[in-house]
Image (cartoon, rainbow, N blue to C red; front, top):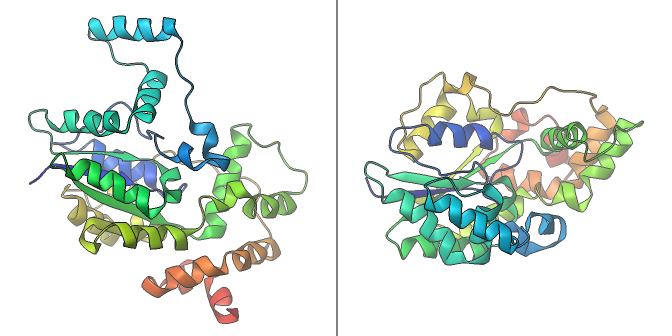
Length: 285
């Protein structure tokens, strides 16, 4: 089997942590220091500008060199800064992991990459191809309303958003904001994937099917990793639910993302039953 780099585009709150965990722990895998590298999306600006890592001070650079000289791991912030600062450093970092004896797969599964344009995806693929490494893309999609609710709750729990007095109103506002929209336009992600990669290099799936025996088997066949049929029962980075949205709020959010439902339904008609708001949205489209 050839050397493979897995580029995970998320989506966020769509099982990407579980996918990364399953692939990273397999024999023949080394995904390096991080789960999410967050190297490319800062270039898009807007809500992703915060992912740009500031250049370390001279003292931090010196301390890093000293650590590396004695075999200590590179500090995370320094690693991200270095990979962001030089695209070749990104490709060389993962290529070096694949040069280790017995290692045949590595990857970077960062949910914010769902927003990367086609030319950037193609550039990443070319960067690895020029080093004799094949890039394979993984993208998981979840009912947009459910994804946004999970994302919203996560931001509340992490203190990024204050606990709202009116959950419905706050959720709808979040859903249509730049922050909510940036990771929910599956239609744009799908178009960019199709433009940048041939079908055989992509694995696009639904979160609602990901953890089923059939979903696990499909990922196993694509990745070349032998996953246990009950692997879908292992939760990674799962969060407890909190306040829920009313049916009215859910419908309002779904209609806002009608174009997303329409696009996904072209290849995944089963969303009419798997995504609660899909049938109504598609009927009214």
